[in-house]
Amino acid sequence: MDIIYTPWRYEYVSNVDKRPSCIFCDRVKENEDKKNFILHRGEKCFVILNLYPYTTGHLMIAPYEHLPSIEDLDAHTLAEMMELCKKSMKAIRAAFQPEGFNIGINISRVAGAGIVDHVHMHVVPRWAGDSNFMAVVASTRVLPCDLDQVYNALSKSF
Image 1 (spheres, rainbow, N blue to C red):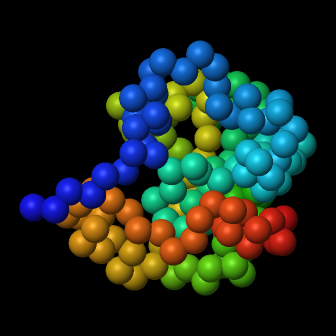
Image 2 (cartoon, rainbow, N blue to C red; image 1 turned 180 degrees about the vertical axis):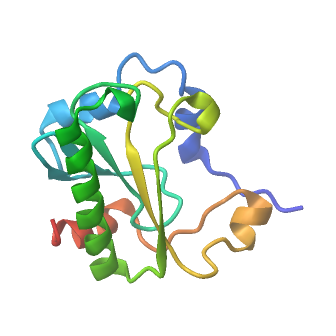
């Protein structure tokens, strides 16, 4: 059996429960949007690329407010999240022509949330065959573009 190493993921997977602060809150406060892959800042929410994407163009929409669930968000914030979801899908379609999307919000660790204290929505573009043997057999994703390329392509639409 071949072994494929992904050392860039070690820091993430080994420190999930040890983070002293929230990555969403930290990134937004830095005001270095390109460095932090923040594509858009709205009134109540922002759009940021996922540093560990499932597919090219995988991004997240998070409220500025540090809350664990959509149940805690006001109507205006929820509405803006959905508007930014539409805008994100249009940007991803223009840049990468996906055949479909997965959109989801994982609330709590048991539901798959990697960051449990700050609710966020995932927008994941999908293509027929994007789950090839590498993901299935080797637990490794092969992405054709790096995050800088994705950021540059999507930022044009935002």
